[in-house]
Length: 274
Image 1 (tube, rainbow, N blue to C red):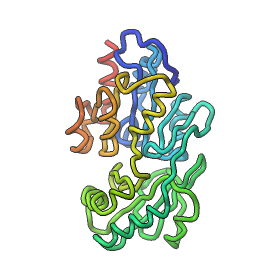
Image 2: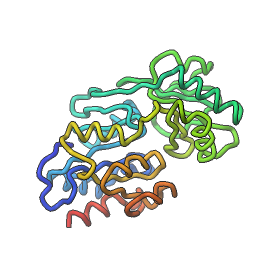
Image 3: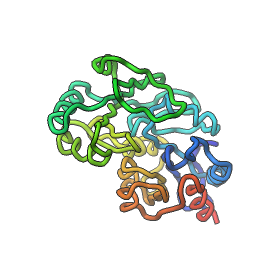
């Protein structure tokens, strides 16, 4: 599978942007054969497929390698543009750790102590998990730490926050109100509220990658499932939410397809391919 652009023939878009978790990936973290074939047909028609994910590169590249994907990928919630074919970072944006620390203090002044984790910058950047932070079951590697102060010892893409009692939506709302002038705040999935460099989003990363491919927002159809995909939908010409998507994303989508478990991306691509 390639991300190379070209003539799109009968396919109406030059760029297909897909989120990973809850969108391209099924619940078991695999990509179905039907979806693989639909994406292969799109790229055979000359369009580019680009993965746009909240995952940083170390948690993304094994999936891209499995897909045989050699194009560009936007990782780390827009912080990283990654060349999968050459296995190298083209751009990387880091979080100002002093601002992040101030933001956390403001949030904790409102809701009390937070549980913390953080994603380090770079091709091999570890995800550090502080005491009490709840990690989802699965194969993705992380490094437990005993002292939350160790989170700040190297450059970071983002900080993850959890609260003992608040829901994800409640925590994201409080965090944005308390610290939205210092950091970006997004909710990327169950138990995943993130603090990001201010102004960073999937849309900023995707626009950088699209420019490298000579493409524009008007050329793009985007697929997603969570509030962190809202900026990407606002940027793209057409936004498709999965049936399993968060209500906030469905509210701004141009259409809703079937779930990630039911090949929702393939359903739309097959229709557009005719």
